[in-house]
Length: 534
Image (cartoon, rainbow, N blue to C red; front, side, top):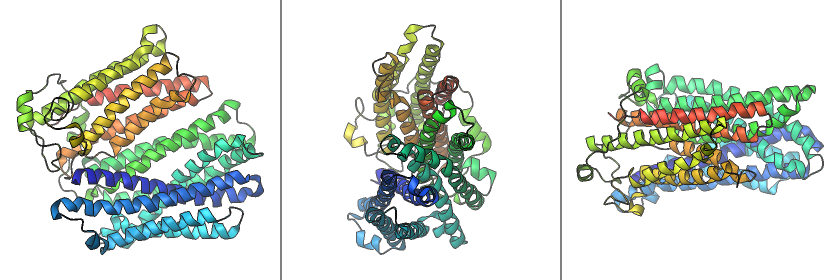
């Protein structure tokens, strides 16, 4: 169970961090945006703010406790029992329980309080501080032999900054649907947008300052940044945050022009779509942060890849389009549920075949999408159906040990995270093909199902960024994961480009965004085509 336990632990931590951001960001949003606006904010908007804070605190409560249960569950296979009592006696378990209790207390205050009363906000502010402080013993810094207090404190501030930005954007986005339902809500939401920009900037500055300090202590060198899984995830986070910053900067500029009365109707109309895209990217950043907590800091990793080895991962290579001998592969392959299995030559050849063929199929899809944009080939509008070829390949050939042709059963292998993610990816590709095709041929173009493509692309990227191939911090595993990090980042950019193409009110912007996501899809295909396991 150790592989599945590790995967679930990352997912549960992601939900805890998302709940944390929603709670901390909600309190910051209430104190920095809603309270200063006073009576200009309708009661339903204030009530929604409190409900979302409560939801965030409840998520911390439930999933922090669930994360704690993962540890004795993972040990049960070796010990033959769940060592719950022994685990609860540890400092880590007690700190986790305290963090969960702080989330529950904040949720209770938000549910029972009144948004018009200053006493409620005083309690919420105190609860948010308690929630932040209670997480200090759970971070990487708490386990360091030197400078633990400073590292833990800076990490808590880093998380608070992230909560203010990411959680605040989610609260801002959640308020928008109410602008049509309550008197004065439209004007209040406009004021929220303009007031939130400086609050978000404060959060970003805290993230940048604390992130630089943590990078110096946990990564220290260029080889740590380039040659370790921890460093690669930090680079991925920086790429995601840069994307969110670009979107946020456009909103900040629009907000300033909005206040001065010089913003155009197109700029004002684009605010909604930009906030939506920014929120989506920041949710993925939270997932990436959860994955980062499962990796040892770069300074603790001795076996590092060189910049040349990392560059070789993405360099053009001969495409492998032939499978290894099936009987030899099955005879020598390790069981899917073996957490310490090292890939043999046939396993590596099969993995190369899987990725290279998938890359060719992705390129076919991308070229079809680009042809469709020209409008010169009507049949090209059916390009999403090419995804079904990719799904069929993934289902039939990508898992030679498992169903339908291998000796291992379908449900049995789902306990292995890599197999589970491959199966989920197959289902997502099928859904993406069907829904996007129906959008292209007209049946779903005017419905909300037109957003299936960006939502599924973003979800796929998020899953890749939480995926770990090995419980060992080995160089060979990192060289696999670094290519998947790149694909995950590109998948998020695909989601952002397609979402903004659908939502932007400006024709010129729609055309530009419409070129972004097919270009990223081409890059995904190239990364897969040149994938090679040494």
